[in-house]
Image 1 (cartoon, rainbow, N blue to C red):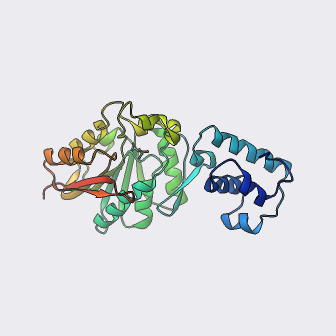
Image 2: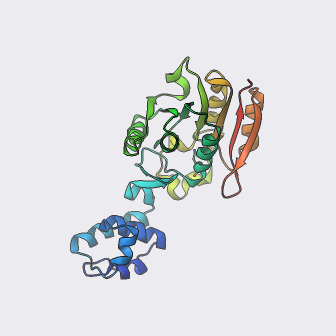
Image 3: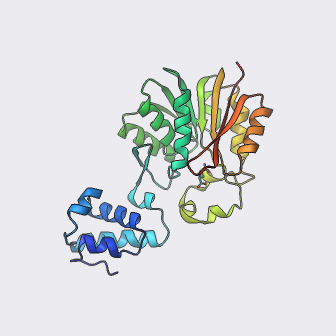
Length: 274
Ligand code: GLN
């Protein structure tokens, strides 16, 4: 399909060389239209400038760049999150972690999100539960800039700290700790496929067996949780048993895993003994 001035929105929607959802997203982005606008303005003809912009966006997508980075945003937990290549693209799987965290949150609870990236988890929690006292850490200053912008955009009150795991919260205890850390093992073929090729490698893999960050988080959580409170961890599709073993070995109780919408054990967690 030649993306040229004079082509109609409706014709382009049918003819762009991408999946229908991706066509729609890029057309909306290029033309500044909503999804409804795309339907009501299907007769509209592209200007020279619009055709140029759209052709560039489609070329980037065809080169493999994730849609979320091209348009600079991704929806998560019903909220639009700004994303750049400094942060992992929020995944629907991670909404399970947010839902579980919300179930566990007592009024006014102190929550810590380790490796917050775009801030998706922390901002979703603080937005849904303005009473919660949410702190979020990341080792990447560039990621924290994105996370702060997301918190501001949603009016979510989150304390952001630059920190390598628990470094910046020495002496503090929380009523809930959550994390979606880098958990893909070095050499996993998924790192060479799809969106992951463009995402920050340090947010995806520990460059080892995939459990380094999970071990560090479990190992340090005891000193930062109020006795009796929960640690909830997202992990890889084949790591649930290993994460439960880590939690048991560290003396946690109520050790369990929860399945994501795909039926995969995606989050494991446990409570520090009271
Ligand atoms: N869930 C991501 C994926 O497998 C990985 C995220 C992570 O390592 N925390 O695509």
